[in-house]
Image (cartoon, rainbow, N blue to C red; front, side, top):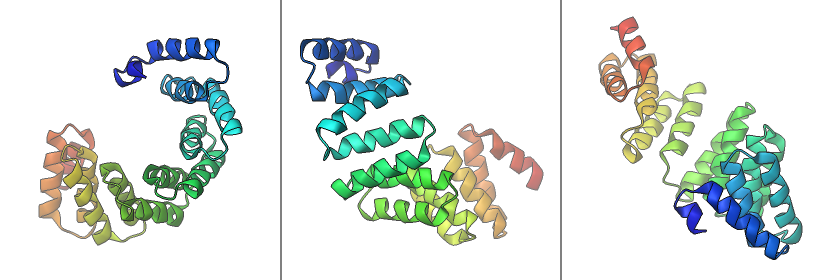
Length: 205
């Protein structure tokens, strides 16, 4: 486990392989090896390990959650949603499972389902710039511009270096003709390195 915390995934993988060679029933080694393999983009192998864990511990909420991530990495959104949902059923306060399920639902054009998941994650206490940003994207697409601006603002409060949140907030402000504040956001986004901000400034100002 120390190799994981020190971000040495290949060394961690060797360690877990060795542990499993000594004890083929060492479930936590399979679980952690699956996570390391997923981080190394060895998703097919990661899926086999996580399947083995779930087969032996069918009420392992985090195993379903992490298998959902693996399915997502493999381009299998339906299976990912099923696993995130199972994880939530087993552990209803698993905040990131709502967030990740929302991301998949958004990718499948289920805006209402994604919004419900983001709202649930936030209501349960998820303090994430990304979840507020993602919620802002949906509000903008649904034409709820004041809600979009508020969500982008919360995203920026949590992570003031989020250049895309400033940019997206600016776009929402442009739609409601708030050009002055939009320009302020675009200039910040540009300074933070988001190239699209400069393009919009040259187009509108």
